[in-house]
Each structure stands twice: as C-alpha cells, then as structure tokens.
Image (tube, rainbow, N blue to C red; front, top):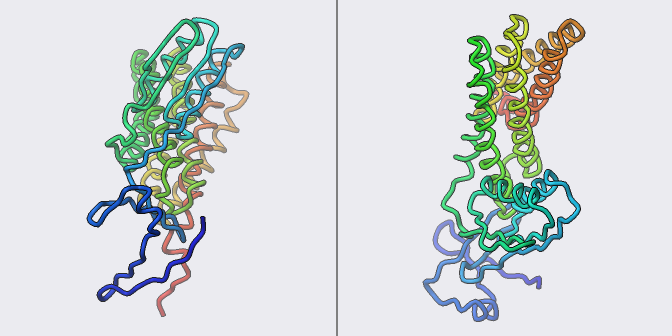
Length: 310
C-alpha cells in the first residue's frame, strides 16, 4: 500500500515522520523498540526483526546430472532462499549436493531420506561482514595467481595442485556476498548490478586459476610463460588496489599491462605445445576478468569528475 507522510523538523538537522498505526499494531511495536532502516538511493525501507519471512523452494532434480544439481544449489543460495528441499534419484546427485552445502555459509542439512534432502539456513543473521569477505576473496585469488608463478618456477607440483583447495574458500566468500546483495538493499556506491557482475566473475576467476594450476603442475616451467604470468600478477595487484582506492595512474598502468599481456598471448599461440596452449587460453580468460576490476570502476575516479581548479 502506498501512502504519503509529511516530514517534521526535529532539532537542527533531523527530520521525522510518523509510522502508520495499523502497521505498528500489526507488528506489535511500542515506543523504544528498534526497527531496521535500509538505504537504497532514493528509497528507505523500514523493517522490524520481529517479523521474519522465510524464503523456501522445493525442486525435483531427478534426471539432472550431478554438476547441474550442484549449480542449482549455488544459485538458490545466492538468490536468498532460506530453506531448500531437493528431491533426487541417485547417490551421485545426493553426494554432489552434500558437498556443495559445505560451501554455503550458514547452511546445514537438517533432514535426509531415501530420495529427499532438506537444507536450511541455521541463522538468518550471520555475524559476517560483506566487505571483509569480499576483500578476503580477492586476496585468496591473488595468492592463487602468485602461486601459479612461484610454485611453477620452483617446480612445486604439490603447491600448484593445492590451488584447488583455495578455490573452495573463494566460492564460500563470493557465494555469501552474492546472497547478501540479493537479500539487502545496501552497497549502491557504484551500482548493484556492476558489483554483482564483478563478484560473479571473481568466482569464475577462482575456477580458472584452479584449472591453470592443474595444467602447470603437469608441465615443465617455460620462461616466456613465466614472464607472462608475472605480468598478469602485476596487473592483478594494480587492479585490486584500484578497486579499493581508484587512482588514474593505476588504471592506466593496469590497462597498458593488459594490452601488453594480450599481445604476448597472441604472439605465443601456435608456438607452444598443447598443454602450454591450454595454459595460454586459461590465462587469457583470467586477464579478461581482472581487466574489469578497473574499467567498471572508472566512474569513481575523482579526476574524471570535471572539477578542475582555476
């Protein structure tokens, strides 16, 4: 129901409004109770913790391959479902779902029967900070990329293969951030859709670095490829720094490095063996993702605001 309220001046700067009596009574509120305010550009949402709506879904995944059941679980979690009931028909699908739940922060399997799983969030308000988890995801991704260089140079096969386990944490943190974006109305500084895309792409980056590590673990170090990976790591570091503190110099440096890396990749295609060619393709994909960390935040640069001192 849409309604209007007049703003009443309170003190020097504050403005107040009255709440609809029917809404106050329905939610059993009284003077002194606290409500949650969520700001989203021109909108301001008022909510009370006393009313908690649970978003549920029941899905029949019989006939789906385990990988698609895995993907469904991730999407349902990200979209904000609090309870997910899965009807399945084989043990492989059940195992894929159980393994995926381990990556969904706050979720637990409550009931399991012959052909049905019930998964539910154990806390509607996880004591986790979006910004902290997003930064941790970025740092893990940079460490994965750095390992591709340092471990391959030392021919440390175990370290390269262990990148697989780092991707598990990247998934956990990025999944939670995507879920938090879908369930809240905050963090609109440079666009919800852009931020969502960047986080989604970061999860893909973790998958690709995992693939790259596996490829490199199976081949001997190549100096041209090592130089390429080293330049990618430098571009990644600049892009990460730009993401949190946009500066024109870093944007230009990251762009030029990306251009140089792209030219190097194109030059090496057809000159390397099959495995190293796969590594080139994987690295090219990684560069395309990291490139967006700067280009999709250029609007935040103060130097581009047009405010020039006279």
